[in-house]
Length: 249
Ligand code: G
Ligand code: G
Ligand code: NA
Ligand code: MN
Image (tube, rainbow, N blue to C red; front, side):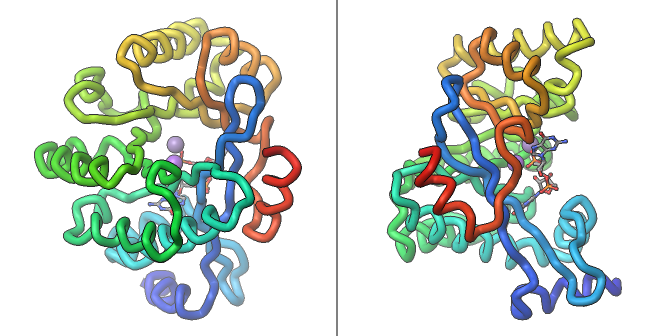
């Protein structure tokens, strides 16, 4: 309750920020960034998203925070000197909130960011919660021209049937599989199967949480389209993204 109250004033108090983690293709060409929310409390210092996102979701503050993040991320990406993509996370609550499409449309219009440069990352929770509503929202968002990405794939209950039932353009292999790649044959088999199935379905695949050269090499060999993780780049503060784009883009 304490943190919840303080989170309420965090946006107005300029305590929220976005960090930007680079995403590369197999040849290490920069494709874009994922926007990740950060909260620096005035006295407690940085508070991990693992702690404040759940509070924000329970209190529905995430709707307001998520809208702020979306607009901020679009404005940032529109200013980069190259047409790179920006991926923004949507919480299930935000996803099912009335007005999401107009919020997305407004963020695109006011920033001037072309819709094809915006990716929205959703998690499977929302698909389980209300599949029909989620499907209709995905359709509306796609009609705006943005891409829909299924995040954290392979965890939870995600079933293969989701992939043709809902119209994702990309899925992200959860980092728990990526991290087990070097010593776990089951993880290797799962990652290989996800990549090959995605290829057959015409869906792009990103591996997240790539931390070692060995993981990177395996994922490349298996034909994973996009790569993200500490090995390739840590989340950067807003003010460093411009120079990063100029240097690596
Ligand atoms: O940033 P970090 O690596 O610690 O992220 C922790 C968790 O918080 C991840 O599950 C991530 O998806 C989530 N997260 C980070 N930024 C956002 C955001 O802007 N919106 C939502 N809904 N979740 C976010
Ligand atoms: O849930 P989501 O996939 O959006 O989570 C992204 C989170 O993963 C962020 O908190 C980000 O800081 C974190 N992250 C990004 N790259 C790596 C990595 O290579 N290793 C680990 N352990 N976490 C990472
Ligand atoms: Na994500
Ligand atoms: Mn993820």
